Image 1 (tube, rainbow, N blue to C red):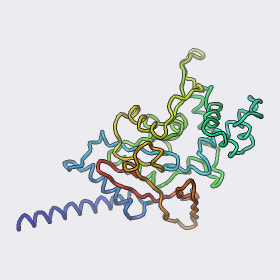
Image 2: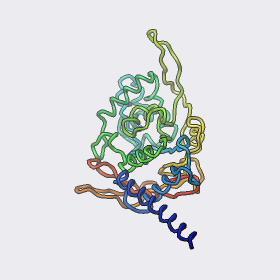
Image 3: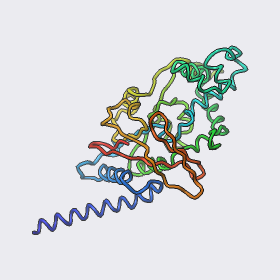
Image 4: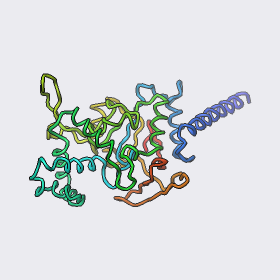
Length: 321
């Protein structure tokens, strides 16, 4: 009888602790609807941070990785780095008269996105090579900063750095408050993302992993510089992502977020994340939904910032959504 009472009290204590964690999460994750998604996150964080518990993970091993495009910020009507490249083509065109008759630059100068994409991956790589190389890393950083300060999303007319998902910003902060180290692992250009990742997401440049081109060391005017050259070094997509995680992070993540599991290069049963129908609406907020390549995405005005609802699947050893 005494053992039964103690067992009941123990379960009650665990339930009380979990409810307390959920209450704290309600403050930390205000944009998340109460439901299975938030509950799974809170329970997972509670388990891995409870010292002495069977699922405790030391702070050094609390690694969470996030994709960027379509996960942390929007990706429609095109990848934002592609929008940057298209604008760079127009800015550099006076120096390259041959682009008037050469694809994909010819289509880019006409703002013909379909024409640009018609050339496939090869055309995109050529476009990036023509607009992202030939300058020092410092010069490229300033070019990106100048573009982000003025370029606006064609649909919402907001700065691209405002086209972020508010729930994901809250999730990043919530994980960090519980001893997690958050990384971006994205197919986007690493030098492009590092310019603004800390200001927008609170993720410092050394915790950004992405696709990269080769660089060469030079002395210019008596000072050392790194020059971006037109040669691919690492393509951070599909199987390239786990390879990059091992190479640049050196620890296996216990949490991962990605909009499309196939592109993560992991088995479907290991990683799962989807965007569900439904989002909290603020007064005057309009929610648009459309089907794109078989997945549902939410696009919202950014006056109250982007909001999305995520479903999560918790699996032993980690949280994947």
